[in-house]
Amino acid sequence: MSIVTKKGDKGMTSLYWGGRIRKDHIRVETYGTLDELCTFLGLAKSLIKERETKKILESVQKDLFIIGSEIAAKPKYVGKLEYRIDSSYVKRLEESIKDLEERIKFEGCCFLLPGENFISATLDIARTITRRAERRIVTLKNKKIFKNPYILPYMNRLSDLLYLLARAYEKKHRKLELEHLK
Image (spheres, rainbow, N blue to C red):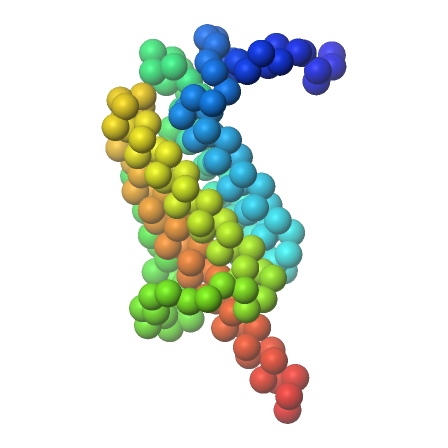
């Protein structure tokens, strides 16, 4: 079976469990943004050596597939999904955030110029894509295209987590630079 189907040549695509939709529909824009985010997280994961951080990022990538599945399914089929984001997913991110805040002794910086090192810059790109996905999800919610009350909090926590991970890799980079100067 070939990947080339030619079914999308006229600007339409299929939804999960049937139905066709325009490729410029907000639903497609949203799960496309989630795909972009997942890809940048894959890039970050490939650069990172620490097993625990890789595990966190891979878990988030899997969660993004779950969110994308819900967004790509017509509302009447959402109940057929094997997995859906619920409060336990949000709580898992909150636990990772708390752990990171304690480890890096986060003091609540606000705006920082991204790009101190490649890993932190990649995580910051993923964070900004998360925020764009979050804005698209707000649009979907306002248009009553989906109703899961846990996806927006999940995306909000994910942005916080990626911000902290980027700061942790900046801190680690500075520490390595200082050790190198000794």
